[in-house]
Length: 245
Image (cartoon, rainbow, N blue to C red; front, side, top):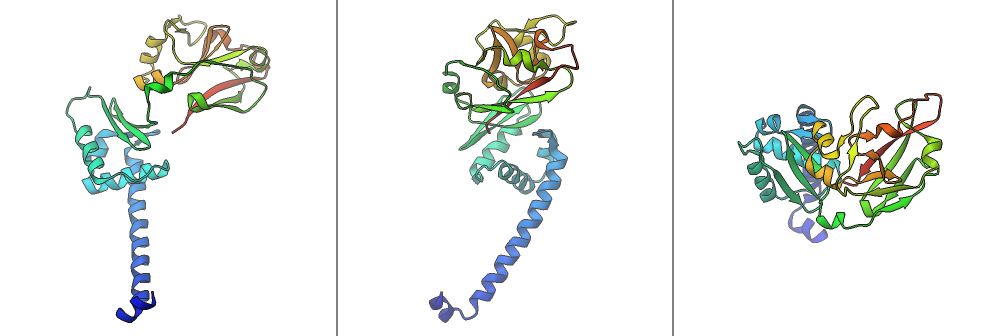
């Protein structure tokens, strides 16, 4: 620093001003990205149509901002170029999956999803048996997520019933059936997934919870009707699966 000061007198002040200008510019970029995010957002996903209507510079700014919110490293320019080329496809049924070092971006029915880096090896794990003893949540590292138990007043499973049973968490094995309500028919799990517009990769990598080989809980669908209690005065909980991202 002293040597630089001899060659460039007063450079410290100019460097400080440049740094301040960069901070101000980044603040404006973040504000623009937040506005664009609200215009393109649909829940936790981004809508492709309004996203592609933005100028390339704003699209890149928005995507970097979105990834930063999820603590993901900044993508390269070539990676962004590849992403936009795939998203711009005119085929509405095209399956887009662009891998980032820490995640994947997927397109499904006009929405861009930020997902973990799914790998077939994730499914090569054995089921785990466990008992719920009133915990607010249980983590399952082998399945890369957390199972939450949320108190509720209706539509849940009785806490006493749940704690009295040995539970099992596992991936799909084939042949599972699910029923939304007592007055609705039991149908193959694949059909129920399709009826709720759940993407294929979520179906494949979301673990199920069973009791005595009876399907109890399916992420994205909820509790099977046979386990839902009708006694509202009875303490009960809803289950919720939170995958790592």
